[in-house]
Structure formats: structure tokens, C-alpha cells
Length: 299
Image (cartoon, rainbow, N blue to C red):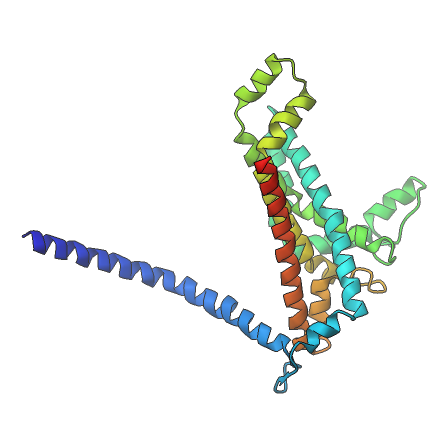
């Protein structure tokens, strides 16, 4: 009987495992077909001269060597760095400030949280089109108000000086709600007793923030910075909709330049090489941030 019970249990476990594999299979197959295989194929194309129509011609690492001296690619890297440094700190800082305020005992705070999060779930294309209208020099709301007040009306999207800051402002507004929710979750995980004890010891609001909030939000902040950095380096949608990389290529980021090479200039091998360089940059940036956080933890 004991042997029969063991066999029945093993049979049941095998059936459960089989059903588990059946349910997991579609996800695994989808990941394999739409992620793993394209990544491998893309790396092969990065070693070739390929226009998407004719047979690829193997050229070794010539594409990567050419990228090192490609002025337009290097310029797109600089624009991407400018965008990243201009949006990530501001996005995180403003989101943390909003989260702290909305963590207080305010009336209608659920409504405020919802209002800040709505842009996150709104289509980037729709948001970019609205901001494109707001920035319009002919009928835009922003310049209309500036004109009423007798102030200078910048050519927001048609000036190489103002175009990138305009896209950056829209991006911060679009994504700030996501970071706000993450920070809010972190703040709600901090025990109120810590603040009460510090307050009894005479610590003011600023000291409580520096010595309690900041250290206990370290891992939350790391997550926000890593995700924001990855998103900023991959910026494409808002550039495509609002400026199309202009004026004078002043908003051409790496991903937009990859898109142009792959689908406008039909240099898909070259574009694949750029994509792998971008992956390396994102990986290195993420590792630096994580190493910095680990060093802080040790200290």
C-alpha cells in the first residue's frame, strides 16, 4: 500500500508539473521568439552590411569601428546624455517632494495621487501631441499667456536652444507620477514611531528628512534612478512626435538615430551595431548606480 501511495503521489506531482509547463509554455515561446531570437539575429546583422532587402554581407566589426568616428552618432550620444542628466534628477527630486506632501494627512489626497498618475497611463503619443499644441508659436497656450503678460515668447520646438528643454519638460510631466507612486510606497513603509522618537529628541523636519527618510529610501531611490535612467537613454516617442529630431538635429537621440538608419536610410546592419552600443551604455550606467548604492550600504 505504501508503494502504491507513493506512486499515486508521484503521478499527481507529474500531472501538476505537466500542467505547469503547459501554462508557462506560451510565455516561454513568446519570449524566445520575440526577444531571444531577435537579439541573436540583431547581433549577427551588426556584423554585416545589410539593407533589409538584399542578402547581408559579413564585414566583421567594421560597423563598430565606423561608429567611433561617426560625428552624427556621437552627437546623438551627447543629446541623449543631455536629456538624461536634465530629466532624471529633476524627475526624481520633484516626484519625491510630491510623494512627501501626499503622504501627509491631506484632504482629497487620493484624488491628487490619481491626478498625478493619470499622465503615466496616458499614451505618450497623445501627451506629445497635446504638448506640441501647447508649445506652438502660432496658437499655443503657453506663448498666448506669455504674450498677454508682455513676456518673451520662445520658439519652443523650432529653436535648437529651446527644443530639447521643451521635450525634457514634457517627459518629466509624463513620468513624474510613476516615480511619485514608488516613493510613496517607500515612505509608507517607514515606521511613524521613528519620526515620533526623533521629534521627541528635538530633531526638526529637515533633520528627520536627512537622517530618517533619505537613508530608509535608499533602495527605493536606487530603483527610481535606475528605471528613470534606462527610460531616458531610450527616449524616442516624444522626439519622434514633437520634433522629428530637429531643428538642425538638436534633438536627435541615439534611439531616434537608430530608427532613422534602420527604416529611413535602410542601413539595418549599422543600426543593429548602434543598438548594441546603446545596450552596453545602459548596462554600464545601471552597474555604476548599483555599485554606488552597494558602497553606501557598506558604509
